[in-house]
Amino acid sequence: MQLPYKLLFISTPVSVIGTGLGGGVELALFNITQEMTRRGHQVEVVAPQGSVMQPFTVKEIAGELQIPVQNQTRNSPITMPKNSVLANMWEYARQVQTQYDLIVNFSYDWLPLYLTSFFNTPIAHRISMSSWTDAMDNIIEQVAIRFPDTIAVCTQAQAATFKFEQQCTCLLNGVDLSIYQFCNQPSNNLAWVGRISPEKGIEDAVAAAQITGIPLKIFGVKQDENYWQKTCQDYPDAPIEYMGFLSTVELQKELGQCLALLVTPHCVEAFGNVAIEALACGVPLIAYSRGGLTEIVQDRKTGFLVEPDSVQGLVTAIQRLDQIDRYACRQQAEATYSLEALGDRVEQWLQNILNNSTQKKSIL
Ligand code: UDP
Image 1 (cartoon, rainbow, N blue to C red):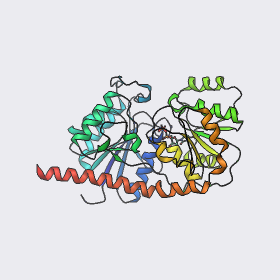
Image 2: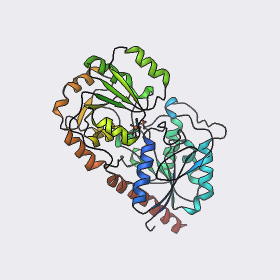
Image 3: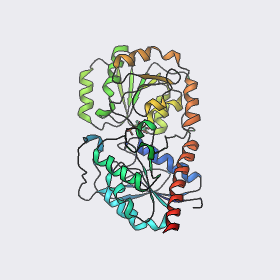
Image 4: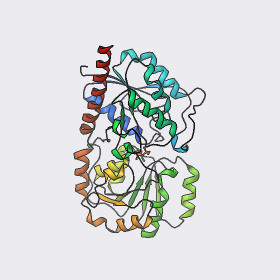
């Protein structure tokens, strides 16, 4: 298949792009669109109604949002609301598929995986979460076996949570480094960035701020208001400040001035965009040694990997922050997480899928 490609990107059905409820998927979709467009590919983005992704136009689709999988347990069945935006986005994809070489699915949902064999245009699936429910594991595995190379993940640690680990392409993530300013003179603040939701474990970062007395700035959308209120009640004396959900440009300005980013998930995170955004600003990471973070943090060089769920471990790492050279953090981001590096990985992935599909057609 000749470059450039005609690509149809289908966003997550759990959020209207720009609200932050889609977490790292929103930034990944934006960054991959930007880099693929820069490389001359033609990209159309399809997303729930109200989505904004300037300067790119979005084909907006009406319908009810999907409930995030984080609220589900291992045996949860697949559910979809009436007038599902997920189903509506894929109905649109079905109608326009002949205009595209390849469709890229950015959601962590059963339906697009199931639909793969019913489409004539190949579908690439960017899987943004670790193993969470049996139903999802099962359908991803079926696609991985039947359509080689079509399943991509963010890290090896994420892949290792699946039985079909060997069938996964690892893309990591990337950011537009020109937006993130290196800051070598931080103020006396720690940072926590992300969706405020129980699996993100913000209470541990708040507890560490209370023990050390170092103010903690918190950035992100309050996805679970009750959980946020409870955290504030449990640590009434913690020096915390809620800064709101900021745009990337504003976020990096604030984040860059912090001593370190605390990343405290209670689940196996696939990646952790916030970690590479911090590195891009020269901000060291203090992260639980769990999931994708184990592949991002270079222990004692660009931060510290801490025993999972250990607040004392966070405190000890905070006390050792002067051992980290902030310039080494920025360098790691430049070496591994630039948009160009991400673009190379994504382009190679798409090329493999298109080559497989061309070969398949010539055999038939
Ligand atoms: N984010 C943002 N503004 C904020 C706080 C967070 O844009 O004020 C974004 C951040 O840039 C990152 C995303 O929220 O892209 C969180 O993604 P991450 O991969 O860390 O976690 P996820 O929510 O996907 O589990």
